[in-house]
Amino acid sequence: MTKIRTEEEYDRALETVEKLMACQERTPEQTAILQLLVTIIEEFETKHYPIEPSSPHAILEHLMDARGIKQSDLVGIIGSKGVVSVVVNRKRAISKAQAKALGEFFNVSPALFI
Image 1: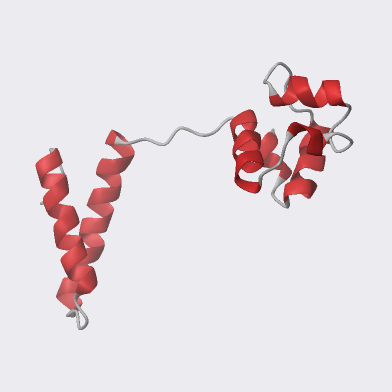
Image 2: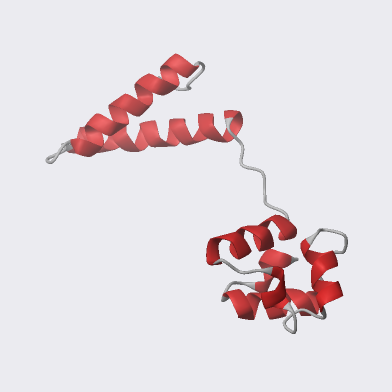
């Protein structure tokens, strides 16, 4: 098998990987097959299931939801109540200064917001 061409082949490859991963004492040959299958599966997934990068606003929204943060909690961190509202509601881009402040507040890289 050099390439996965169908969903059926993909499913079979995944099943084989699962069986090989569960094997407690893999032979060197089984390990080589496992590595090859993982590479082929990753190639298929990249082509058929691409992951789109998230927008800065989507990342902000996710972090706020995940941590139970409300717009009012960002007042004073990235600006006034009005500024927070337009940023959170995607009516204004996140500035570099706001990205830095958000990075510090959420303890993540400011690059996520740029």
